Image 1 (cartoon, rainbow, N blue to C red):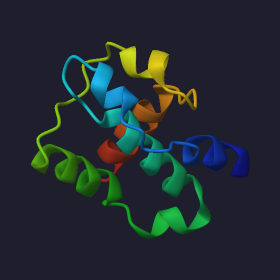
Image 2: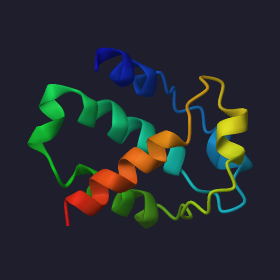
Image 3: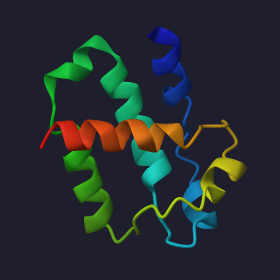
Length: 95
């Protein structure tokens, strides 16, 4: 569990994923943070975190993920798009 949290926590917020994405989506960055925080025991405290973070992303004008997976290919920390899957699963469970 700690390894999974650490893998997601390695995101440095460099913006490479947003820059390469045709939709200018920050989903990989947001998903890495959601996956990191939700994997930790304290992450269960805020079930609405994925929805809040996605809303903040949309409010800032970022696009949504269309699964081009370009973000994964340029990520210097090799964060996998499975983090987006984790985020979406948590999002749908919270509704």
